[in-house]
Length: 438
Image (cartoon, rainbow, N blue to C red; front, side, top):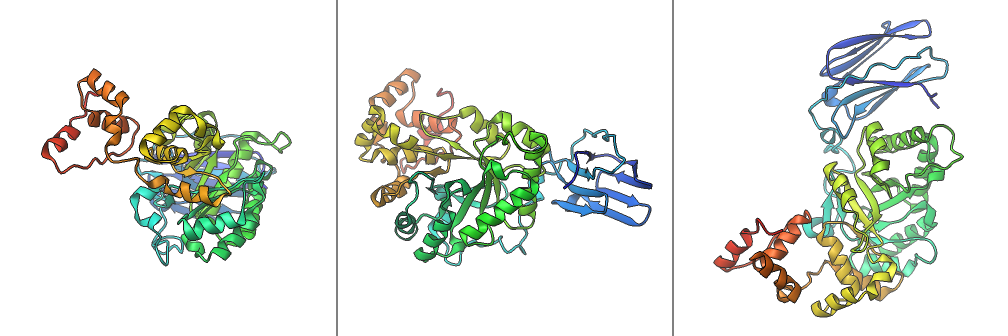
C-alpha cells in the first residue's frame, strides 16, 4: 500500500524535472506527445500519449500511473510514493489540456473478449435502439432492468420468469442486498446465456479502499457465478467514519481500483450510485476514467433536473431506481387519470415516462403479473389520443400552436430525441415548425 505522498504532471509542453529518490536521480521528461522516466539508465520508461489507456509501473520505492483525466482529456503521469521516499514537493501542474478526448482511449479494441457482438443469439434489447442506451464507451445498457433488494425484494421464481418469459436482459443488484448467490442460481435455471445478460452490482462503503475494493469485486463475481461484470458501481458516496486515511483519498483509491478492473477487462463499465454534484466534482478531478453511469432515485415526483444535466454534460448516463416510487405514486389521482385515459396501468405510465426521457429504469417486484406488466413499459402511450387532452389543447391555444407542436416541443425541452410520424404533407410541415413554443 502506497503512502500519502503523491504528485502528478499533466503532459502538455516539453519540459523536464529531476527528482530525488533515495540516492538516485530520476529525470522526468514530459512532452506534448510522450512521457519518459529515466532512472539513471537502470529503468527507462517511455509512453506515447496517444497510446495511453491506463498503465502502472512499480519499482521498489515508487509506483507510477499513466492515464488521462476523463473530463478534460489531459494526459496525466502520477507518482504514488512509499513512506520512505525523500520526495516532499509536489510538481507544479501544467494547465494546458490535451485536445484528444479520453473516451477515445478507453473504447474496447476489436481483440477484446468483451467487445464486438454481445450475444450468441442477439436479444431484441440489444438490436432495438428504443430498448437500450449506449454508454460513452460504446457498451449497450438495456433501458429496462429488473431491480432487486433486501427486505423481501428478491424471488427466485420472479427472476427466472423475468428472463424466460418477459425478455429482461438487465439485472441490478448489490452485495448489500445479500442475493447475489441466488441470482446466479436463477440465471442458471433460466437457461439464458450469461453473455445475453447485463449484470450490474455495487460495492458497499465498508469495502472501499484499493485492495478491499478489488477483494469485494472478486467476491461478487464468485457469488454471481461469473468471471466478469457488465457494470460495477460505488453504492454510496459516503466513506465510513472508521476508514483509514483521508476520505477523499479513500474514494480516490477505490475508484482507481475500478479503473484497473476496467483496464483488465474484468468489468465492461464502471459507475456510481446516489452521487450528487458535490460528490462527483472531486471524483472527476481525481479520476482517469469518468463514471459511465450514475444511478439515483428517479420518477415524476423526484426528478433531479440539475443533476441530470450535470451528468449529461459530462457523458455520464443517468439511471433511475424506484421508478414507481415504491408504489406510493401509483395511487396518485393524476397518474390514475392518465392511465385510465390511455388504457394503461399506472406502473406502465410511470415507466414509460422514465423511458421517454431515455433514463434506464429498474422497477422491482416479486409478483409475476407485475413483472410482466412492467415489461410492457416499452409500449407507446397511445397514438394521438393525448393530442385531444383539454390541458394540451389549452396550452396550444395560448401559444398559437397545434397540440402536436406542443408535445414535440415538450419532448425536445426534455432532451429527448423526438420522431413524429405522419404521411400527410401538412402534418410533416407542422411538426417541423416547433421553434418558439415555450
